[in-house]
Image (spheres, rainbow over the protein chains, first blue to last red):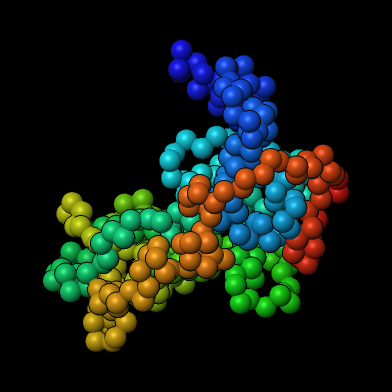
Length: 258
Length: 88
């Protein structure tokens, strides 16, 4: 059966089983064994390059050899399930957290999470952008019921490690002479995209708390009141200006009037 | 401050500053580079070198990558203070 042959071939490529299917031995240039090895090397090489493309900071942090080692291990456990290789590697952060040889780099899973968010932000749909001319038409009495929509490229991540500083220190053109103290306290990172450029910014705890509520669909009035309960210094105007400039809102609707 | 008043001030400020200024989010500037043919994701020069996107980048060799070396991270993690949290 063709499907059995294909399944067998996949096992040979992915798991290195020796080929059980019938091979046409008439081709003189390669033996079947060599041909399978070439195919397998291409398979792994492509998936390695897909991971390297999505996780350039992780790669710099651990070095090329270790990244390759890690990628090879990951690839044996996760097959590509999509024809688009840009969708490969979502599970890497979680996987690194359980990967013994990388355990000493406690911040690495969070850096990988941030990089996947950046990768997704880069390839996210353009969506609509908040139209301020439309927003201007909303009656001030309705401001409390505004529901701001998240742009598909916007992500907020929390980490116990300085992942924003780590990410920024590994961008092209950044100084190689950086000093990062892992004990500098937890951070909230904002991933956003403006004009096809992905940005990573550190949010204040108040801004992060507010934005997470907004992203959950909470109305402007409720989100602001709840944020002020915990963060009396929250400055709504400053937060709105900064977040609108970062292109994190896709539009708005008016929630049910209370 | 009363919530309604606060929201009005903040929204009014946002609209006044954004609509008057040049940095309006609605005023989407011309995209400087078209995606794919030209836009560079950090670390990649262009589509033709973006090997991660497609599988035509042939590696017409068989694998001789030794995998049984003892793996130790050797990247920039050395430079991060307190980077090695747990001794192995």
